[in-house]
Length: 365
Image 1 (cartoon, rainbow, N blue to C red):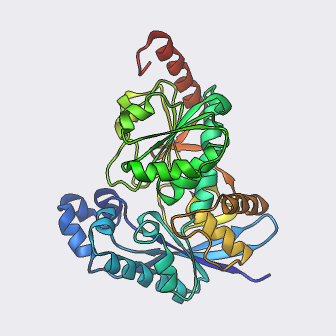
Image 2 (cartoon, one colour):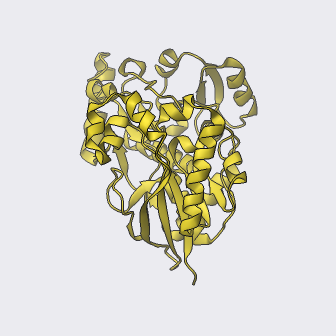
Image 3 (cartoon, rainbow, N blue to C red):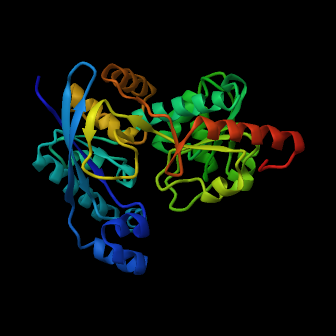
């Protein structure tokens, strides 16, 4: 059986934390100065990934490639320049031996969400968004049940619903919950998404995040914002919030001030085999983001095709990649919140505080 080969492009999410981890002096220099320097650093191989073995014995190896730009640079620099840098990173993966490359974080957002990048490379490209959607929804519904909620009776909200992940997340949630609020900045785009939804849900739209979330039992947030968009006072007691965005959408103040609310990170996946990433990106051993996992799954299948690209992710592809993930032994790896494991004790305590808060009408328990 031949070895599947993949690459995955990553970039620093935080100047102080991510750049500072490799170059400690960066913690003491102005962010703009660090970004000036990053523009002059070419994309590079970060690590060799080994030990990915599917349940059927299929194997894959890969490479992390660094594209040294920050989220702010991805959004502020000339779009053509940024896409060119990502293509350079893809070529580094290609030269290493990759037959498909995944786009991480803001590399999957810029421009036309990977289409132009795929045109600039001789290998397949995926954003990983299809499997990200599946794991986000699977994790959110499971967390809701653990919090004593019945999704079939819940009000849900999707923040950032007009993006590629947000659209299909909204579509699939509308098949489960009876009430769904689509939250974004542009009313016309919100209505366009709402008009495409079919399911059991009554659908509303809102451009006011704070008021829209106050009635939501379940929140999935998938914006591409540079700063947090969800604050402690936006949420009702007992709400379950799945933060798929990187950088995160949920303020750290929620963790500190709202112990009656359960916040989970979207798309944390256990990888089959004895995988060694050769790089510490803050996850427990043998786990990864769903976007990385999708790239691995396609490599194990040796399906070297551009899979999740553009702004319109298909629900059929979400279901297909979920089936392939199960075939190879990928699974949801419990829950994490603000870089920490969410234990059953944590969930039980959050549930108790939520019940107390609802009884006394005091958010925070």
